[in-house]
Image 1 (cartoon, rainbow, N blue to C red):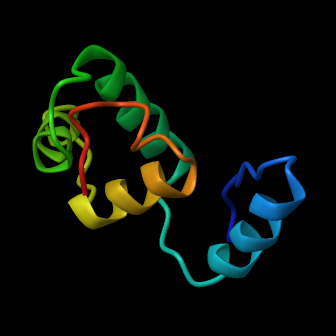
Image 2: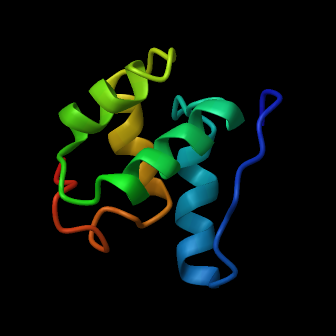
Length: 85
């Protein structure tokens, strides 16, 4: 989508919802997504605001709202205790 890879669920009930949302959601670029995920792995205890700060220290500017939507879209928020919207 718009030059980015979008990973969707293989579960039909989730896939339908994701397809409806992805057209209007702003996602990080693939490079930003990798940095976000690496920083999330390195700092699983931090919140989204702090995660955005860690990403910015890597030279990338990603709004916390974009990070939150990205993690929520991929169902990663509930799997990490510290990343609450």
